[in-house]
Image (tube, rainbow, N blue to C red; front, side, top):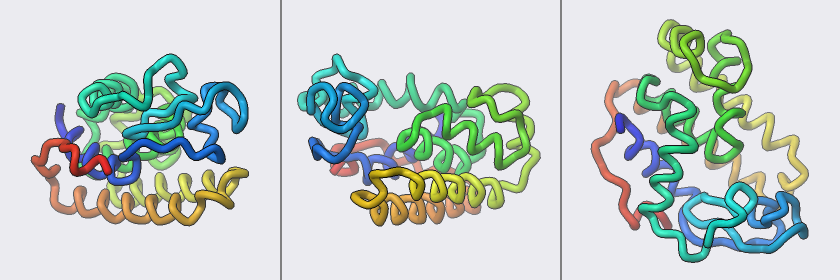
Length: 188
């Protein structure tokens, strides 16, 4: 799984426990505040993306499988350099994997179609890794600041992006992901 366990450890610090905040559109099965059923989010797996899933009873192992299949594989996480994988993965978890890939593509000058492929990978490997991470995170900041729910969650989002940016640069600089597995302690 490459660096997925390390990336999940970081992301789950922000996407951990069960939440059913009615101001968060992700917690509603209808994809908008007040639309559908308020079933919540757990481990970052949200009702708006998985309306038929029993969110409240979701296990960490089930969440890990969803993350690998629906978030890690679409960004070609195993092929991305350490650090860039985290910046792209966390962006995809927070804002959708296609958007995360588009931000990566914008950062490296690839066609911005939201689908990670050979051009995206080649340009990522040829680009300056730190500049790539900084550009992804700047695009994330601009995006979240444009959201109507920024007034509720903005400070937390900006803190998360800054921390993920710092962690991503540290991973890039070290050249290796941490070998820690994902544990329930990381999913708080």
